Length: 222
Image 1 (cartoon, rainbow, N blue to C red):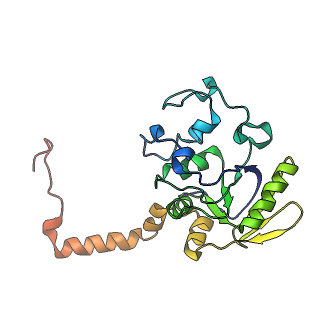
Image 2 (image 1 turned 120 degrees about the vertical axis):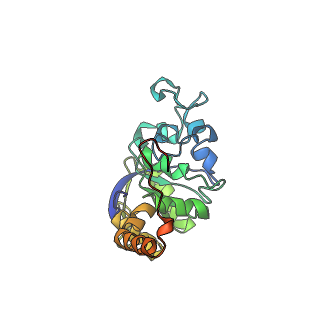
């Protein structure tokens, strides 16, 4: 079960780079785990730190790059990432949205996203918003000009509102929208049909009892 997403007001961090691939989002040496947690400290690792990152390091002992956007004090509490074209390209690793989500981002805004990355975000409670490139350009200008710049992102209305009240609308697949609104991941969707699954399995075993697992004695022997 994911945290439901309906509406958020968040500080915006501008990542002014196109074609950011998933190895830049979370480098390959951190992919040893298949759990969804533990990746946030290594988000954009090669860009955030002066030293090479390895699994198990204490982030507090590392040397951050002072000029990287996410290390700047004005953006450290950001929950909305503003990006350029083709964000999330490269390999299909699901660790990339895991890292972004754990770092604290709930929304990504860009002119477009790599297709597999876009789908992985939606399945993991992260909302990727596609806006026209002209709108993204304007947001970059406004974020740089105004410290503490926040956007209001409303999934119900499918809108992004600026501090000045300008409204941008975005499209999203209706099914994925409902999943985000309700906090359903793929497991949650399956468990909504748990009773029907149990009924099917019981009926199947009644018709084909030889498929039932063999009983074992205390020594583990059939």
